[in-house]
Amino acid sequence: MLKSIKVADYMTRRLVTIRPEMSVNEAIRVFLEHKISGAPVVDENGSLVGVFSESD
Image 1 (tube, rainbow, N blue to C red):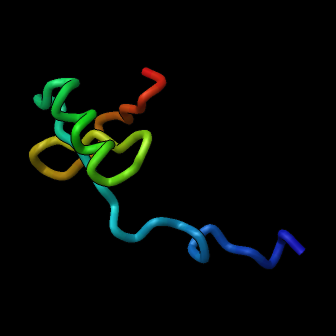
Image 2 (image 1 turned 180 degrees about the vertical axis):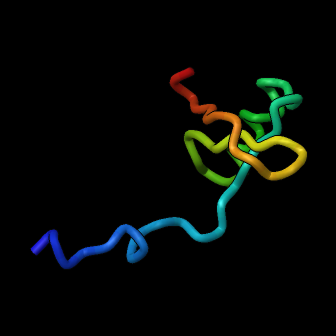
């Protein structure tokens, strides 16, 4: 059963990202606004540089 299920069937397509220069308070506001608990951190080129979450 699970072999036929793809990640693409469940993944988020409208990804919320944050920037490394954001303050923690700004990131928390983004989390609350979008009702998320974490987000990828991307640089000015849109390249992934990390992940920040409420457990960090």
